Image (cartoon, rainbow, N blue to C red):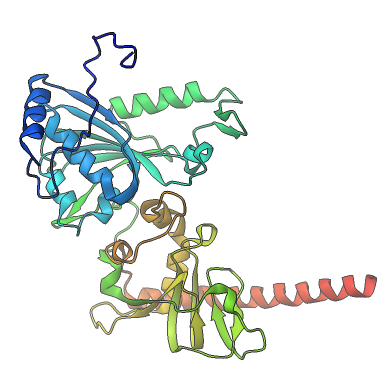
Length: 375
């Protein structure tokens, strides 16, 4: 309609970002446009901003600035946008001073497959009013929207499931209704700390939340995954589930190796104790010397495995290849379980697990030997 010039759409052809990073209007022309938009008294805004260069948070701020008090903003953007801007000049906290987060709908990763992009996105709903620490946010999981990706046709409702899913979604959002296994209300502030992915419910856990950086030191791995040397004597740990070998080692310690790149292996963790070298697709996590938070590394390796899906869903970022950014990972809150409980868990479960691992390895060897004899 705009291209046909019907004259009734009120569409403006220019950049909608009128403020610089400090929040100041860039020039007089922008000031005039901002005043014009405000004269229109917009009460609703729906946007899908560009995802590069951390633009989503700026578009969110600008849209809120346009809106009338209690106006509504719906924006689809990378899921970690709010988390990764907690430290970036406090942009997320500043946003919540003027905008209440009402709901977050986690979307399927296949959403942009037709554009040959893998993006971890969510739909965020805001109201232009301050977000108070006691306000609850409805977190809705729609990673399965019932649609199927078909080549050259996009995502199609092959099994006629979308209408039911859509109705359930609209009902939950409009009525801020919890549905077991699908959506729940969570606060995003705890003791003054902002946790955009939501504070775990007390019914789910009685343990305190602590930032990863308060429990572990980390450093990046150093070697490309393709540089394995199978004649070497030291473990070479990559994002893969299977370890390789190398002739040199860079570490001789107890550690958790955490995959932060390699999309299919994102969030995979390995426990190691000894001499090893690590792929540059991974972080080496070592426990801090902090008497307040004693760590059993084998326990937390299992813990990271247990929360892998949730952590990756909260933090995976990128417009073509998903990664976990170090500065974002270190700010992520996880539960601190007392050391005596950690130790009892390992004593109760790890011996049985290792025994089963050995039996499986023995059975696999016998199976391979049987195939060789058969051939």
